[in-house]
Length: 474
Ligand code: ADP
Image (cartoon, rainbow, N blue to C red; front, side):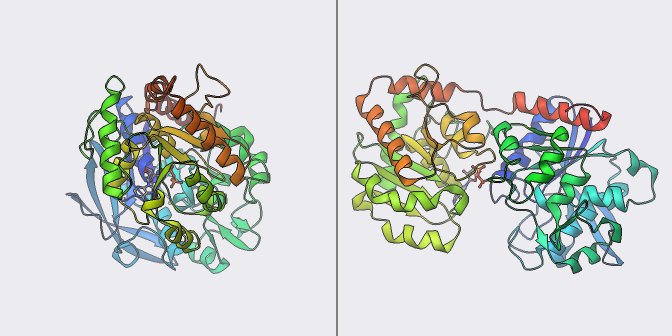
């Protein structure tokens, strides 16, 4: 299979969240299965790997042809095409600009218009999230004349349904899509242009990043207004669990750690806990259960139930180290509650290496998400033997088994109700288990033994590409 993987984020070149992790690891896993997968991403101001010049090409949008440059780089053997158009992409951040609509409409168009310059004609164009979801609409509604475009099939992966890319109608006019596409069966969503909806309507196959989330988004509670559309497209919708990059996340080889360890040398993990306690200015007590969190600080991640629970949580005699950044409305009370003496430290920033130290230094990893398409935090923490305490939603259901309910197979603690009291109850159970000591090491070893690599999931993506190309399945 020849696959062009289009993403706004690709780790380590650009990462904001889980999308970057996936784009940085899934293509490599697919290549090791023998598929010719190549990545395309915008060339941001911060992205300047060594790259070969492939010349210029014209991006036809906004009633004009814009000259963009195409270069070819490589990540661990995966070819990466970089779309270089400085007026829109030569900026320090990936998102959060007032013209994001224009920027990613342009990128969606560029993904198609660059193919002649690249010389690579994929069987499947794999789009990810709203940023690239307009490409399937361009391909079906306003394809370039070249016959080879007609043979391309599209897969859209929804990494997060909450972010849909909603913009005013004038952006639709700027895209150059035909007026007929502006209707509720096309790209229109209550008078606005909806990028993600365009992808769902026009892609040949749509998937989410866990089986449970693919079902949840067909309900009003999780559907963000698109549940009806998703129910009507259920026959082309599926869920494939994300893997994690075993090269990046491996406690036995992680150079960011005070002490490397594996499931057969778990006792060495204690050194990482001591180092983290010291770094955070927490009491250096090996017996105090240490809860870690690495998370965007947003509504999705459960801060509405976590923040009111913090005083009671600390009363359970635990330490809590949070690394995260996001919405001011949550960062502000977290900053106020933070007090190393009382056991709570909040690093309100983005910091890759500190993330590694927290995954390794914690006994537990807390993830009380309101919704969770897949979640990588709990997968990474499992790999590091930090037992996850999660709200059972989306991908957390597919990866964490509650040990109270299933003592033989359990690898963590889960609660259902989105309430502070339910969160506290789960932490209480976890802490009691830890303090009792019986079975604790076995629980950590079971967590670390779980296969969270891309292996099986990469094969499922390969099947999905086949289905898209042949019009079979799902
Ligand atoms: P989402 O994609 O919704 O943010 P995931 O759990 O799927 O959540 O992925 C989050 C990824 O981003 C993980 O690799 C996590 O370690 C990382 N991450 C989140 N916040 C930070 C931060 N402040 N510093 C470093 N890494 C972070």
